Length: 465
Image (cartoon, rainbow, N blue to C red; front, side, top):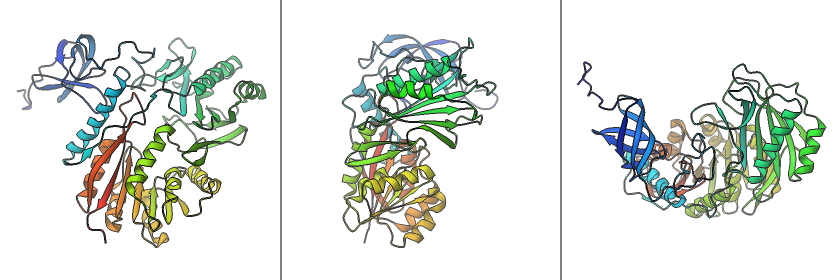
């Protein structure tokens, strides 16, 4: 033991060790131990034996970098089709067989529940995609200056703001990839300067392309650091003549030194400033800043599972928290007496109201505001208490105030759609410890080849009258 009374760590930085990988962690990393001291090893797979170089040591764990794989897992993919995978911060499970990643994601959900001491809940097998490639309908490529001082567009390196040049990303829509590449080349060749993050100079910060999976309509958004930048008609003609599916081009101004991609101000230079897509039997309007599920194929699967398990009747009043552009609420409206949605993004609420009109949905009403702050007042305005609540929160999960209100009004069912099993498990514990039971969880693979996992579960009130 050292002078502070702590055990002396036997693992040293910059030294090599041979490690048996005993498990995979929350982010897909391999986990091994030396003298019962935990080593996390990115890109290692359970069952492998690897030689690692220790690159970081803390009082409770170390991080190792693979320098040799002595024994390879049968689930390791040898011939990767992505040149930037080793450094990219996007897909972190590309080295694994796809079906194996589905098992891993199920285990992640189970482990998160176990960590919160939630036992006896059946976690179903993860529902994957038949084709887990080119599924993203929203491309966001940063533009910057490389180490040689030249303009570059690509993806961020893992845990950094260094941009790695990429040709085509295998999880992005193919058409979006092409539009982005041509946009970058044309603008740079015609005097538009790439953004320099070090001194906040330059013009072009991000190229964003949104695609309708079924409609095939595309939106091009140029995120600019300068309101005086002139995007000439020649560029508009070039893009829209080459890509007939580009229905609108929007300039977004972000002049702040921030990690947030978009600013609040948009300027439409071609089209109407939005596109449409089809999800299920419904048509949805999508604006530059509004939320729309990135994987619309799996989103439809997710919503159908949620609605089926909720078993909604024509007398049910449904509350849809974090409703976005109204997708879940509109899906639900067919079965319920009335649906109420709450969303903080003003543009999304505008789209939600428009989407209700487009689809001739009359039994739905939307409220704009922060769920945490306006839920109480919204419930007072609604008057009739909702008996089914859908929640689809951001990664941070539900706030305590919302959980307290749900425990207070006690709807008969809470349908929880989660993009973060850790916060999902934390929130479920706070709900079921009071009045709710949880029998099963259904993971859905919304983001193939990443460690992210979406899941849906229905919490039922134990003694509903």
